[in-house]
Length: 338
Length: 272
Ligand code: HEM
Image (cartoon, rainbow over all chains, first blue to last red; front, side, top):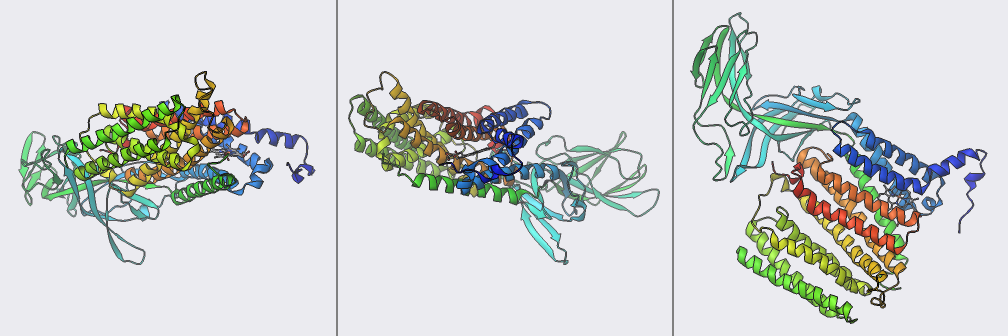
């Protein structure tokens, strides 16, 4: 039996309630679900950004649900169903907040190098709280296993970081095991390669500089292990190439990404070509270049979205309340009797 | 264990399934109730197929979730497992075997046409989320299949041929109610599948949701389930409309499971 709704006798009657009734219409809900499905298809097939196609139906969904919660007696009788729908709205809001505050980026670190907040690529929401530059961790080297046919397996990368009390922590991370610092999740990626280290002593004086040059990703650019590089303060661009003869990743058998046991570095300045082994140096137009040895570099992806645990909680709440709703509903009448 | 032994066991299982389906269909045609025979044949088939999957798992060192062959194989198994449980627990709906088995025959025929060779296990598959995500998905599809069986009866009854055949089953309203109970359970597991998938995607690719083709289709399927449940109480739909919506959900879910991953080379396949 329908109970008379005490709210309806409140002073703010008439037009307002009629409007609310329209907004709370369950036919409107069906329309919204169809619009959302259409929005997904538009957003998915559209070449340009079509966030509106999702935002409009989701906003309508929130309005429709809020109006229904206020007016529909079903939700007052069936608390688990109410909680389920509120959890759905919570998910929508959390996703929206997540989009406004997230960050997704990439960075590269040679072995031994410390992350200083610099990203090579990034996209982020307009309200992202920039805390990245306060973070530090170092890459302490990695291994990547490959199965036959050069299929990439697990990456295991040791990283180290210091907490606020000055304690050093070491952790092995991978493509699926993130290093989590202040909500930022750092993952390794397929993007990795060789990084020759050089000491550059400019003619203009000043202290020598040590740095690495990240060659193109390996094995992605196996046959293009070269790069143009201009030492700091120099006017002459150099062309750097790594050369080695051995097979690192053998398609015929399982193997592991590693440094070649023997290699040389070709440095070309203009037409002049030099070959360097570890420890050797060469005098160039603007200074002296010492080849300090070969390292590896790892490309990381970083992801920040503080809503993740809340989203998970809202999702679990939705499932649990949905299950409870149906449990209560179905236990009224057995499954196998008329 | 050799591939040959695995395939022989599979063939034996398929023979039992085909027998079960045939007996069930003749049961409807001849107005008999060979229910114990059907259940026995299905269980024998399931036992043999379980063995065949175990042989393969043991030989390859990973479960059946990489190649099309494996995905069909494991889904036939899981669909039948869910169906057999429903068949055993709810005697009233046993005539649905005549609807459900032909659908599975199509999948079995498809299975026999795909190559049983091993695929490569991507690095992103070394996680328990694989089992949780896939497991929930399989239960979802299984419950929708039961609903499809019941909906099939509702629709058959409206045809001239079926009008007098299923008299010993509950009336259409009751069948409609039962089929939507399975849809409701399906929605719970579909939701769980999406959540587990999002957790896995966050671990595997550093993003929980990216609208890749599989995610997009899975979400549309979820929306369609929500739509059908809502339409049912908003418009007090007839059992016939309800049955058609169930079929729609099944077709969409089927395309999502077996069509999308193989049409589009999306990152969802995991292998980089
Ligand atoms: C957009 C706004 C939505 C509104 C206003 C709304 C409203 C409602 C209402 C009033 C009911 C109870 C109907 C009754 O028992 O008479 C209901 C049931 C339900 N809704 Fe929604 N809903 C919305 C979106 C969704 C979505 C997106 C889902 C996704 C799965 C969903 C799933 C359900 C389910 C599973 C039931 C229970 C059906 C049953 O008991 O058989 N709803 N909804």
